[in-house]
Image (cartoon, rainbow, N blue to C red; front, side, top):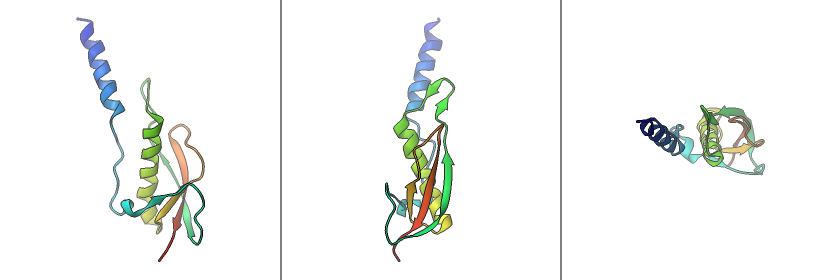
Length: 105
């Protein structure tokens, strides 16, 4: 009888590890993520985005957290007239800042 709650908890944690809670907004697919400052581009602003890094006692996969932060930054860029985002720093506690750029015509 005690195995059922443990098996249920393990199933929930396994399912959560594969979940993506952040979805790409319309227009965000055209936004690129770059590692260094792009040349010939106009800075449009900065955004700070955040996601849950922990769910209860479960710590989420850091690559998945980073990917979701990038998606959120890409979602914000079109609203600032940008088409490129650049991380300003690494993420901490599920939060990260990005510079938004407008590159090209």
